Amino acid sequence: MPSYVITGASRGIGLEFVRQLSASADNQVFGIVRNPATATKLTALGRQNVHVLQADIVDVEALKSAAAEVGRMTGGALDVLINNAALVGGDNQSLTLSTYPEGQESVLADDLRQNFEVNVIGVINTINAFLPLLRKGNLKQVITLSTGLADTKVILDASFPVHAPYSITKAALNMVVAKYAAEFKKEGLIFLAISPGVVNTAEKPPSPEQIEGYKWMVARFQEAAPTWDGQALSPEVSVKMMLDVVANLSEKNSGAFVSQYGNQKWL
Image (cartoon, rainbow, N blue to C red; front, side):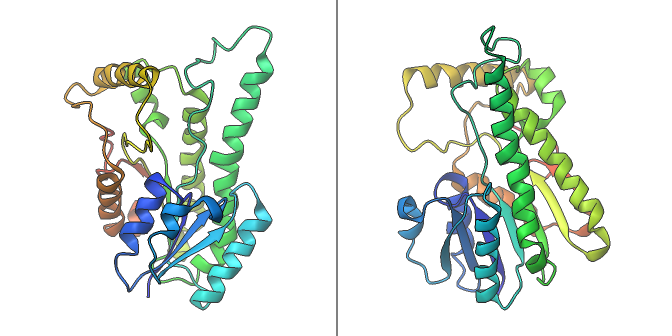
């Protein structure tokens, strides 16, 4: 029975990973959430092969406890870890590195630190907590969600200076994936950084400001990819595409950074 752990499983892409993977009764799926009480969409799946566990990825002890519970239920092994949890957006996402308010340099530093804590350190903590189980698994895969905004060519071609802390930390995360791949190459563990594409994970209608922000983003991205139609993917489509890429993984791909297409096409 293949086993999967997905972080950030309460909604959006993480929830969709759980939904699609648990559709097969042969799979054992563990959804990691910060607060099970509010993960109503996850618990509403009502599937016997879905197990909801509590852990914040910045809480090392909680991650170790979750890993121990997974090991107890799987016989001490894990096949696939999907690092989906991340810090995205924030109040200052429309600012560039040079337009944070003068005299409030600490705000920029705080934004960078918070993004690093979740998007880099949190993922490292998660991988380390589940490594003993992964080493005993059959598939031995660690899939980490990144973004095309971590590709410097995209940033330059699209003239996209905003979302700086997010982009910076996701670029660092790609290096984390490569470092683990280099370290565990001889053990057969496979690490992959994958972008889900532009995905609509909104749970309510967008505000006028959000609509205008999306139009601006589309215009910028079309500078880099003129043939892109500007339409966001649904979580269902994005996850299906990513799982198709994962299904064709091999040790030669370990450490790679790819899109939902399995290549460097980001849009």
